[in-house]
Image (cartoon, rainbow, N blue to C red; front, side, top):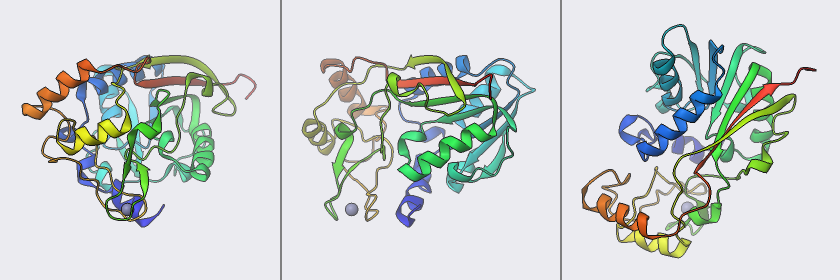
Length: 267
Ligand SMILES: [Zn+2]
């Protein structure tokens, strides 16, 4: 992990309830995860748990008796985690014993990983999961639509730091030793703005910039518009944003791809 990457994930604006991007998207994703985690799962490890919002949701809807562990490399993220065991660590070397969790979660993590970390990370999920693995990723994302150009060094990068995208066809065989057992597409259909239009709309404050993008080369923060309505939550910019969203064509598929993998019988 580079210093710039580390700094990115330590930004306090990435984590916590106040910074949840588009809460309605999150609700649909959390409901899908709850449907995928087997009822008999009492030990759950979330790898790349962030601020612990997924574990918090599961604990809330399933009640006491759930033993949850949040594995997260960002100290800023871990600080928000409550009610779960907190473990600082990276997906490519998870400090948890073999088959220690009934179910392992890995939500919106895989799309961020460079090749080597990705390869080792998948193996780690399979190592610590006893029965099942629940993975969520953006659904068939066209990554270049989220590209921005760094004002400082000129580097063009995906502002959500997504390095790979997944379709339903990519899921089968994704985790060696595990079978794909259930898939749910969840969440709203996103508007499909052409990149140049989106960049212009962000610049004049018509579209909020989700998350806290920063350049992977030099660390410069991407400041598109005013920055005071980053999540489209309210105010006049929020209203214009909603009006615009309803006017443009939408992607065909719901935003999230959520999948459960079950340990193969032979394994
Ligand atoms: Zn840069």
